[in-house]
Image (cartoon, rainbow, N blue to C red; front, side, top):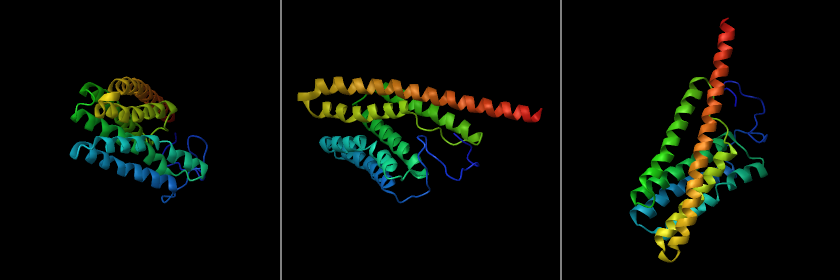
Length: 212
């Protein structure tokens, strides 16, 4: 992670891939389409209660989570916008789905509260980093795994409520994925907090050394 003002001539992503400034790329287009799926899901699930269609939208949004990143690396179209847009789309899917599921009692409010508390923790860490001139930390594979598990769990849980014939199996699989996703989500959050704390300590140590 580097300070914002210090921009390299050839910046690189977390995997060493060159990062560009392009906006109109295929990966970014996929991320924008994924974002459009959020209001569509909310309309289908909360307004018209078309659960089967909502399951399809959730499944497509979850399974395409890795597509934009893979295409970006494959076509060498990694961009700064894409590095921000992809995790933003993931987080928006998770939060929107959680709130909608809580409203219709698909998941208990305690589960939603646990995930929202982690988001508040991350927001606080980002605010501290920004105060010291740093941008958001790079996405860790633990966080990506947690996101994948949660995005996989949601359509399965919804399937269990929409079809009584598979309710037992879908509930077991969906909640297994959801609880593992929640645990890893908090593990990733703790890792981000530790990383932020180390950066802040290093900044203060340098400032103290300079003052001396």
